[in-house]
Image (cartoon, rainbow, N blue to C red; front, side, top):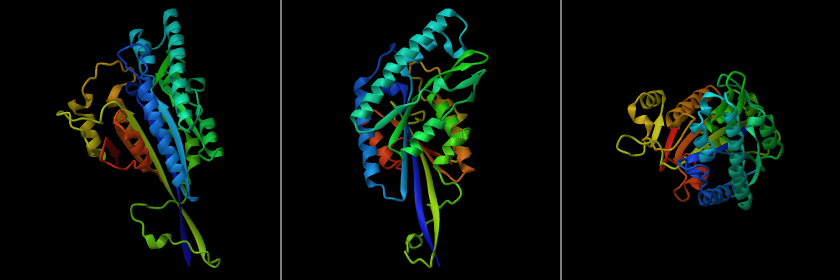
Length: 329
């Protein structure tokens, strides 16, 4: 006889958009009240998930945020997205770095107030690019902190710069960093058991009975979930009538959306030097394609972080399609 023991490993990656936590139309205009509110929801959700987890479930949390007006405003004004060529541009880079750390410090402090244990990992200290393309980001310490703390530590990263062999400097969006971490860099997979997986869409409750009979063989299967939650200031991806697209599911849906005129999702007027919504959706599509070939369930949700309890609910029930735009293949 065989007994099936189902283990569950969940990785939650939350991105707080720069337009959510700052006003991109005004230089260094941080929305302190919004950050305080979302961090309270993050803390409540993480505490609840940890308290309710059983011994067969492991949960990891990574918090990311954009640079917002602390980065995009000056980067656009001084054309930093095309590299650095002048003394003035290098000085602006220094100014942005200082202001971005102020934003990040406030996020860290608010998370600590709400019983999250954040540790900041500065991507620019280990990233290197060539002509705008990421060559390397050392994420080993991020993964080590998750594994060794058994999920106690929540790494915090943000959109950043990378030194570039050709351009001098390249701007790295938060999405490009997460994409690299999930798609091209092997250490992240160490969090998961990719050898034995369980199809949680076709399970049979009778198979989940655990028997202590020593004569029976214990077979362990693992459900691996990655929840990528992108909180901005809009309700999700909007159609031409400003209605939220509830879900984008399958290759054909993605191609139709990416090739359509509606994908500019209404130009919002603020500065965005990292590609905007089309770049974000294209990045999500690439991630979903990658995870189809691995034993991982990837769920992506784009939603408004301004609406009360949206961030909390995205953690507690990330597959709930009652709000936001939900992406899957």
